[in-house]
Amino acid sequence: MSDTTNIPDHNSFDPILAALPADVETITAEYSGSGDSGKFDGISFLDAAEQPVRFEGEDAVSHELERRFEDLLQERHAGWEINDGGSGIFKLHVKTRKLDHEHNDFYTESETTNHQSEV
Image (cartoon, rainbow, N blue to C red; front, side, top):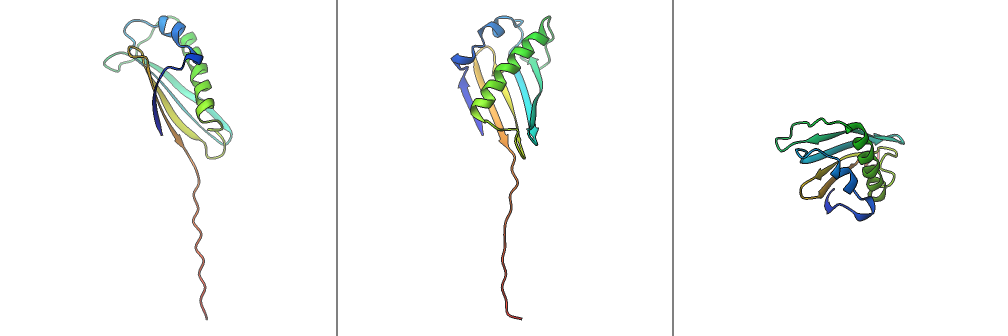
């Protein structure tokens, strides 16, 4: 399932976006989890050529972004890490302030077949 929305007001990204270098165009945050445990696998800051951008204060900005993305994830897909779990990616387009969120739910499927015959 994929969702593209404006950045929600209740999770203001303004202070974070203001701290970014001008060449950061896209921020990606991937997550995965199962068995009642989940985590963000990494946050990337990318330029127009989708090359990584490194900057002073990157760890602090990553931490704040992860906190806000986790709030959105819990709001949209509470329990995403339980049982078979799930995964996904947030993609924040800095210039347009659009947030794409693609989420995958994992599940086990079973199919039952019954056969009766005379022997």
